Each structure stands twice: as C-alpha cells, then as structure tokens.
Length: 166
Image 1 (cartoon, one colour):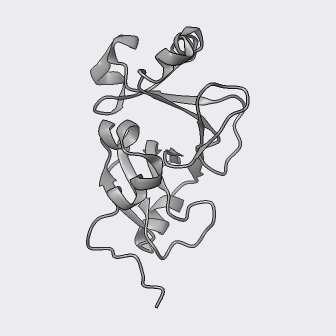
Image 2 (cartoon, rainbow, N blue to C red; image 1 turned 90 degrees about the vertical axis):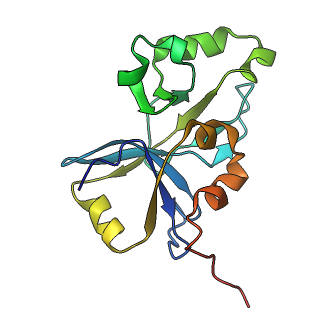
C-alpha cells in the first residue's frame, strides 16, 4: 500500500469506537512500522491558552504537537509539507505563536494538539480492509478553515450516507 501521508482518514458511520467516532485524522507518518496522525476535528477549550487545543487522539503525548499553515516559518515549504500548505511545526513555530498578541493568534493559521492517533505495523491496513475508514486527500482549507464541527460531514465522501435513526 502507498503511504497515506497527507491524507485524511474519515471515520465511516459504522465506526463506533468512541476514540474515533465521527473523527477526521490527518496522517503524518505511514510505513511498514505503522502509522501516526492527528484527529483534527476535536477542539477543547484551554484554561491556560488564549486559543482552543485539539485532542489529537487517544495516545498520550508529553508536550504538544503543532500544525500550521505559515510557509514562511520553514526553510523548504515543499519538503516540509504534510500536505500542500500544512506543516508540522517545531519549538520555534510554537514560540512565534506564544509571542504573538492574543488578537494576532486569530490571524495565524495553526492548531495545537494534545495526544495523537497511532497504529502498529499493518494495524491501519487491517482497519482499511474492514472498511471502517474512508481515505480522502487532505487540504489546507479543510485543516484550518472548515469549522471543526462541520469537518467530518464535509470530508465524508458523498457515497457513504449516515444511517437513519428511524
């Protein structure tokens, strides 16, 4: 299977696991050793920060991870992109956000994550074979501009209807 880096895994309606129900996961690494990504549609308010953080997944993480859309913050925008216009930030990027005035944070294109989603060798491939995930190309617009509460519906392919409750 080709690498899914830069793609969304969109939980299909049949996926009932509470860790992933109605989630959209941006894949950051994928290979023979497994896969790693971030749930990009689960924001939570932070008491300590002037912006929301995102629950990146059920796996615990020391510190936080940062996705941003600021091409001028990295040396090589083409090599450093997770998908076009989306970059994994480092401590220097986090410092820029921390030093920005609270009003400026609204103008910056970024998301901070606590936790991550991870799969061991061939685990994700098994889940894909079970058809619990739809694979969709990620875009900067979906990562940063689509409201989190609308992202799952927006990213879910139209041929996968949500089941009726009737």
